[in-house]
Image (cartoon, rainbow, N blue to C red; front, side, top):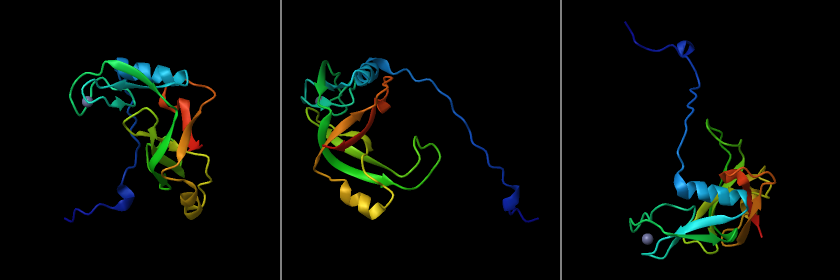
Length: 156
Ligand SMILES: [Zn+2]
């Protein structure tokens, strides 16, 4: 007997996976900062880097961070990509742009949406997002203490 699956006999389902995650003090304080339009990092006292988002320990030195530092909500766009492909689990429907911004006062890149650009034409959109230029956070009007308290970063 052949064991070839008939494509019409395939069952397609979506699995829901609800979960609860204990954030811990650094993430909780970082997100509370966003609610108040402030971006906090933690400083490693060994390598002196300011890590954003705030972390409990420095992943380079393996020592706990001790000092809280507020960094700017502006910085330089290091890189970006535009997502046109749709896949399960996306927070927002494409197209959208995601970039890494080197915030002033931080030593790590901060990943978030890049907005304020018409993304309907990929070639035109790519020319309007500028690596190396200054970008600033656009804060949500209604902030709830999560990463989406920043809607996106836009060209300054
Ligand atoms: Zn360190």
